[in-house]
Picture 1: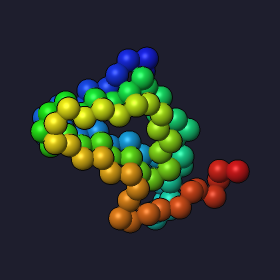
Picture 2 (picture 1 turned 135 degrees about the vertical axis):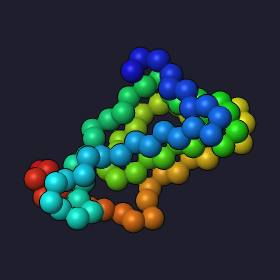
Picture 3 (picture 1 turned 45 degrees about the horizontal axis):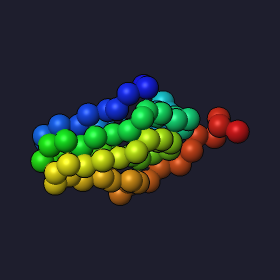
Length: 82
């Protein structure tokens, strides 16, 4: 996207790689989620980045919000990625 992504009140945006079929906790990377930025514009807005996601853009919050980078249950990169 060439614009900004808006995450409003109680909204959640989750960005991750693609789970590999038939492989537990294995992910294909998403090369880049590119945007001008991410605006968390409402109370309890949440941005989650995990499981082999590569994200680019500024992050701005105008109210009480959360940003989570990583995972409580990390996975591994697919063996088909060289």
